Amino acid sequence: MTRRNFWRGMLLFLCAAAVYSLGHYVGGLSERRSLRGGKLDRVMKLIRTAYVDTVDVDKLESDAIPMVLSHLDPHSAYLSKELNTSEVEKLDGSFSGIGVQFNTVLDTPVVVKVIPGGPSERAGIQAGDRILRADGFPLFGEKLDSKEIISKLKGPRKSVVKLDILREGKSVEAKVLRDDVPVPTVEASYMAAPGVLFVKLNGWGLQTHGEVLTSYAKHKPEGVEGIVIDLRNNGGGYLEAATSLSSEFLPKNKLILYADGNAFSRQDIRSTRDGLLKDVPLVVLLDEFSASSSEIFAGAMQDHDRALIVGRRSFGKGLVQRPFMLPDSSVVRLTVARYYTPSGRCIQKQYDPENYDGYVRDIQDRYLHGELFNADSIRFNDSLRYFTEGKRVVYGGGGITPDVFVPRDSSGITSYYIRLIDSEILPKFAFLYADGNRAMLSQAKNVEELTAMLDAQGVLYKLTAFAQKENIQMRTTLFKRSFELLRTNLYALIADYFFDREGLYLIMYEKDEALSKAVDAINEGKTYPVMSEDKRKALPGKGV
Image 1 (cartoon, rainbow, N blue to C red):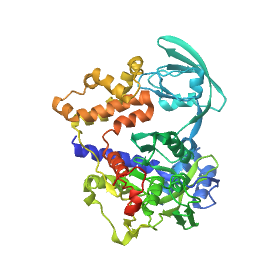
Image 2: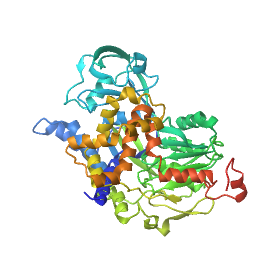
Image 3: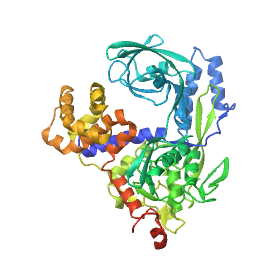
Image 4: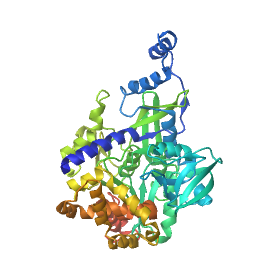
């Protein structure tokens, strides 16, 4: 497979997943409504009462609803009770469980992380433990999948689950009192450079606002002079999360967005007070998978000339969904409005309700057109021209275009690398190596020491030997070309087991061009696209 075909296939897959998962929802507006007695309702009633055979009418309805919604827009959707519960847990920021992360590469779930302060830590569960049974139910065997394991470990808050564990060859029994387990949207936060706080957001939930402020407060003693918020691959979440965080970076009474729809009267959302971070220099990182709430935040910052936007053009989702609860606790997520950034632009890209595949292929088309690699390939519609507060030109109709373009990095991608990725060799080997060398690697005090250990152990060459056993032959020339990329990805995956996501991103983003440009912008006082020379010179500790 060529590098070009690899990216085409990968982008098509990622885009299909993104269209399904991304969104922003008007929280707190769930309603329990049933379908009125229209044609569809009457047909279902006829089937229930007059059809020749016994059929599962509930299943017929569940199959019919997505078909109906598919003729509206790409983001109106039907969620089963189970899927809706899972989505709400992510956005609400917690669920009831035992507080571990596990891996199922082996035929037994292996604990890879224990949530600090969580139920399992209190019960003495340790990383490396093999969970053999939960309340007597066997959790080992090749036929058991992650969903079934999770169903046995999760349960009502304050309920107890008895775990049979294998630890270093010895049997251990533990009783874990289930409790709320946090699901943070701030994946990592650390000082990316002196004075520069890096915050990685993977979604927009009820706790996002507080999590970002907590990250700032934690690192403020280190001398935070600027913030980089990374929204790459962030497909959205609650609308209110984006508006509340936007408020922290703006003065009082600034328009953040307005929403309007056929049955949804115009609603303006403004900052209600001077934000705590309104004077802190800000850079926002975007890419083609940044969508919905991520675009709300970035759009507000860009339209008020409040932050520098770095990266690539965002996804382009300007539709707002509202959840309507059905009698069986499944949910119809219906598009009820379009949102508009402060300048008045709607960033929703074009769509044809009868051509969902074309909508999904949009990012692949951007790749083929060269947009992911060259800023000059971005197409603008002059009829959708708008102006920021400082009279800069911005465009609607297809995402947020960055102020500073950063191309997708394709260096190091070879057919050998692609085969390792396609076969999932990297994460499998990373887990097995981390699990088998846990005692040694746990002695590393930081990612620099861990990296030195991995270099000394020749881990990359052990990866190639492992891959060879999996029928992926090493090609010396291709391996050398992919060496740095493989090293970065593999070391980051291993670091994740010992230093959480902070360790992963410290390695993964060590040479990240977008982050590097963001740090430079903060250091050079160029985070405000429109700023007087006097104001730029007045920034704390920043030279021009």
